[in-house]
Amino acid sequence: MRPGNERYGRTAGGPRSPDRAAVVAGLGAAVPQTVVTNDDLAGVLDTDDAWIRRRTGIRQRRAIATGQATSDLAVEAARNALASAGTADAGAVVLATSTPDQLCPATAPNVASRIGLGPVPAFDVQAVCTGFVYALASGAGLISLGVVDSVLVIGADTFSTILDPEDRATRVVFGDGAGAVLLRAGSRTEPGALLDFSLGSDGSSVDLIGMGAGGSRQWSTGLPAKAEDTYFSMRGQAVFKQAVSRMAESAQDIAARTGWAVEEVDSFVFHQANSRILAAVARQLGVPVERFRTNIADLGNTVAASIPLALADATAEGELTPGQKVVLTGFGGGLTWGSTAVVWPGLEPLRTELSTEAGDFLPKYR
Ligand code: COA
Image (cartoon, rainbow, N blue to C red; front, top):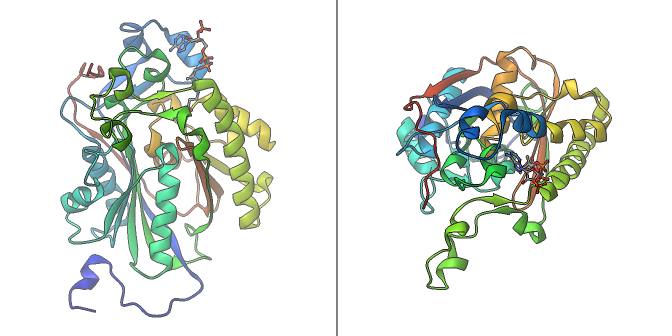
């Protein structure tokens, strides 16, 4: 190994212990200062606070300001995860996002450089609301193989930038935010070790969630995109049904792979899509809904950020405590889904707010 490579969390190569695992060592979160309440949206759309609360469980969400980008939130959450772990270093950055700063190149290298990590490997993972679980699997793989000794795994999205200003079904649901964990090399028997993964996809349902424009399919036509294709859209009811069945199956599968009975799981930290989805999954799994950790009322659906933000809030509120058996499960566009299992470690999460200008929350017409 070249001198100085330790600085970047690189390893020397060579055989690894079969016990080697990725261990959650730090947890950070960041949300924009601007709060968008249901009443704010009712002022510009045909909707109302009672409908939104009843159908989604959401009271408010956050939104970045004009000129800000996903990386601004990702940098802040990543710094918080590093500080929470008591280090300034990470050997790689894996960023889950489907609202990157630009289509090309990836956003992760810019985040790594702004945090001051040096020439570490850095790449984006695109699995929409499952992105954070897929990114955890990627980071855990880098550590298990011995490529690096630590990985910053970030989930960050700014869906306020891709919502149709006139679409009440999506604008009430989504919010902006970022969450991050620092994974370090450790042993499978330690609290915080990611014990296994269960991952899946079904590309035949590609049309349920997504954005038509902005890719090779549209550009190869040589024609400008239709305005409606430049916004995110989803078929809410079909997505709802898929979300319930896929997440329930995924949680059952990860429990079985880990050797846990579903009933002995203390906390379920699922993608925060809709509080009715969480209640339906709890019914399908036959566990009390009180074991589902949720912050959707305050943040809405923050896409790839939702699981780490829920982890940070539940830990700060004392709902996630050391020694608990925890299942993390995501579901999103693609379709994609996935789970991991962890015995919760002792952690002090850090959450900060990205400064924004009050009132600047309206998605822009293209
Ligand atoms: N305010 C008031 N009415 C609304 C509304 C809003 N914000 N959004 C939709 N409606 C209306 C619809 O227009 C429809 O009216 P109609 O019956 O006159 O046609 C009615 O409410 C019912 O629409 P529907 O789509 O069946 O509502 P829903 O109960 O399924 O709730 C979602 C809509 C989007 C909240 C819900 O489907 C959902 O949460 N889906 C999953 C979303 C998700 O998880 N996405 C991310 C995937 S990871």
